[in-house]
Image (tube, rainbow, N blue to C red; front, side):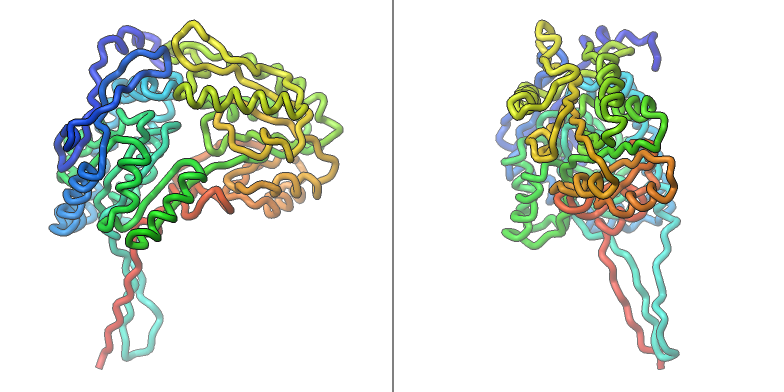
Length: 496
């Protein structure tokens, strides 16, 4: 992390552009409407952002459809599309400091992570899918001598991508990478809480050689721009990442419109199971704190239910409570900060409401629990640990999306599995045990899309991401993501 950059000075000089990008051009809203974007870091005004409405979504979808129909992108040779996506990734890395600063000012995460995690992961995702373009083969079905049956993947057409504010660039890239690599056109609706990097990415894509119209960005509110995109009769699929509440609406919108495919990546309440036979519980506690308090706890896969075996629970709680203060909230523009600001006042109130619920339901707050940096003009909460939690409590059932975790005790392996699976979510889980039989047994029994063993959050583009149950459907990342943005066609020829 370069300490030579004065991020505070750089932030003061930053000129953010909140206009939409349609057909390769920066444009104002059709009706001229905007909303003011302020930073959760200190409340400073950043810029006016386009408040997209149905007319703006219509313009973006028309542009995307025209680009798809004339095959200016889908019709290029796979090797040519690959080169464009690789150049796009290079452009992202070349604009690393600008993009990182926009991300931090927009949603409050520490600048060291915007630089070291978000920008680099975004570029890697785009490059990885670029590299995959000319490596994926279609199939020939086994038939008799008088037939040739080909199974081919074709791009769907126009993909609507609706992404959240917690990892604005990374979540956009997870949709853009496979959707663009497959030859689709995309209309991206970023969160109104963090729209600035999305607009900049679309400009960089055009600079890299992506034809205008293939990637459009319309900022705006969910109930206006997002709803218009999800209801649009000329959008073939929606890739949505966000809350389970809004994910239900996405399915409704598909039913009300053209039965477009809907792929939801939704919430989580991930269980972190620590068994007495693991041994190094200090390492488990450190890993838990690092994963839970990363990104201010604003992660759908945050390990917010910590299931600890009775015999080691008291020691584990002490260790975890001692880790929490190491993640004290500080100025996100300082290069050493590890915990930044929550995204806005609404989120701050939500998180403090859950902390109040924890107290009122009888859980013991053993670390944190208070608002912090109240003189900053921004929105900060101390990393918070509750002990004495039961799985029926609100803080153990509902996704908090803040730096708050709950320790739940268990006696037996069977009880641990039952508690872990007693959730409407199934995104991720973790098992800590040195017994290879137990590790495999429990990993198999957990109803989650990813099960970590003796670690948490180790990750790569090569593995799928997504969940069971109300954590969503479909998978982001890996080659499996192509399933969401392509149609399978069978072409059957009779050979005489």
